[in-house]
Image (tube, rainbow, N blue to C red; front, side):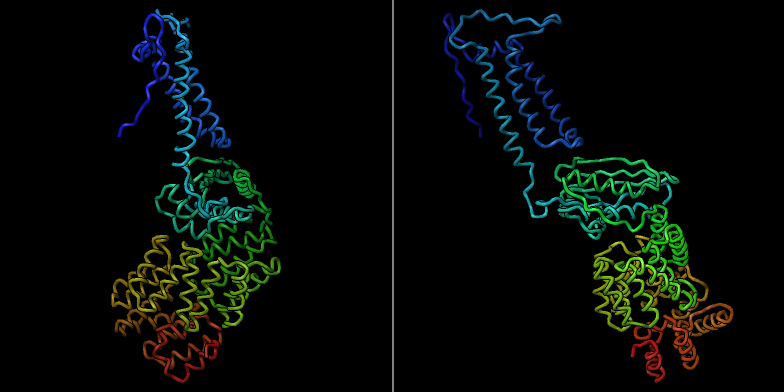
Length: 591
């Protein structure tokens, strides 16, 4: 529907009326239209440039409003000057008036009035309609400053430096949580979006935050480059950005400076937090240790222990490094052919040292819980896990181990709930995803188990526990060739692999092949350590009951953690009806 446009009519002049047509001709003769077009182009260019400059220099929003008003006021000025003056031959000259008589209202005034009237709608449009359209509806989440730290990208040539970018991301999340009045999205929520190609505004909507911090880390030897940008979700413009070229030893200063810069940009106060260590070399070694520890392989665990020991040598008062060493020593039993008592005593000493340095360290309580678990002390294991979770409710590893303790006692449903909570707290944890897959395998949900095992392997194709889980899954489904193929991918010693193969072949009815492998492992046990619990399990499955119980009693005497799965491990099914089985349950306090 066409709009009604009022026409301005000028008073008649003596000697001839100045009609609308005459005014139009005069504006054209004085090149007013050309000046208006040029000014419009310049004004548009100024508006396009001023917004990113304003955000980059942290100017207040009012600056943009002043610029718009100034440009609008320039509109009548340009029209008036174009009416009075012209450019001829490179010189500015006064325009020759048209051959008309003067009237009561000079045409220049009329033209300026028209220009002013034309500028008013533009100003109203900017400050009313434009703002209403661009400003998002206020929400409870956006009412207070909020931020999400997106995973920093490892830009180094060495993929092993991934530990550094992950460590910086997590430490910035922790640091920003200490800014008063700032709501920080959890690591869980942020990592759930990892790998998804979503725009800034969509990520902000998903996480319900008003700002995003993203960045990258590049390391070359001891040289470090950290780039960080704080982005406003509403318009996608940078509120703050900076590149830090420092030595690795300055990493703490970089993290602190980033946190302070964000606090300043959001006009908030940063509450100082005590650092776990002031030694940057020890900190770097600790991050490396955790990176390899999370790999859950024999080589990774040994590397992790080495890095934690180096970190302790760098800073003997570094409690987190002692807790890391305790974890690396404790889980060696699961990934290496080593007697549990040999490593658990050292692990316990490290965990106790960590608590001596920092009695409120959640990681140390969780470590003691794991050690108690391996030592058949379920009561103390649960006590330490609860203490760890009271101190740090989002500590996914403590919750996963708490679930493991529930599995041992046959409380699979409760364990599954703990694993699911741990997965929410740390969706990228390989071992947590794997534990949840095992509960589905136990329930007979083969499709669900396979989906989780595959998801875990997408994150790390070499993750051994997931390949082990797939081997069991294929065996349960009668896919023996596929099962043995997965076993071949496991980075374990020959004895462990042969026991695994023997169980698969026995389940498939290929008893003779399984028997040959069991004899082979038995011969190997005379010259190297083989878990008597694992060896006893395969003899029991093959029907050698007396031999099985002799080995299981030996495992009890050695406090072999392999006996902890007596209640739920299918390998012991053939022995459950024997009275001697109850003696074993009493040994591990499961009666």
